[in-house]
Length: 140
Image (cartoon, rainbow, N blue to C red; front, side):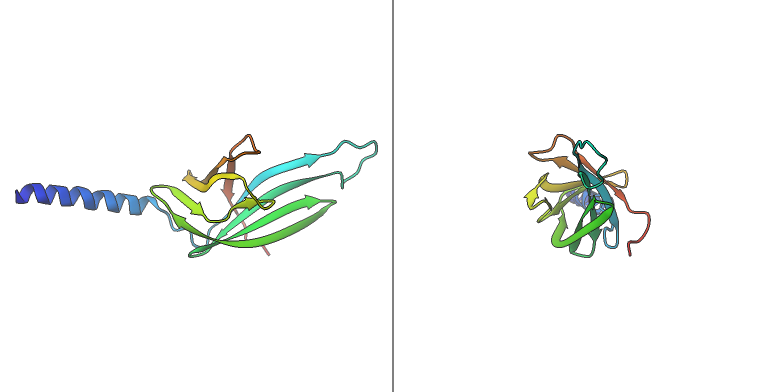
């Protein structure tokens, strides 16, 4: 009986420890990903006829800074919001408010950590999943 209890306790602790080890420390990490682009055909070249949107995610202890970046007219426009985040089971991160143009765009606001990337399954209005790569340099 004591041997069975020991085995069960060992299995439970092993499972808890392996789950904890699979969660990497996100604090201080930053990621960037392409969201969408729009190109408008014009008769004459016009750099303001379209735009490209990217998103940066800057993780702090319990909060993530979400920076929407729009490249248009040879200028960069940045808008920041903050949202709480937390680990779910395994390799999943839940961000409370992860919006693009004030609308949710990633299914369930859940990001999957895979191969040092964050993957978001697309929600309605998009046809492809989103990949956020680690940022290689600090932003100014």
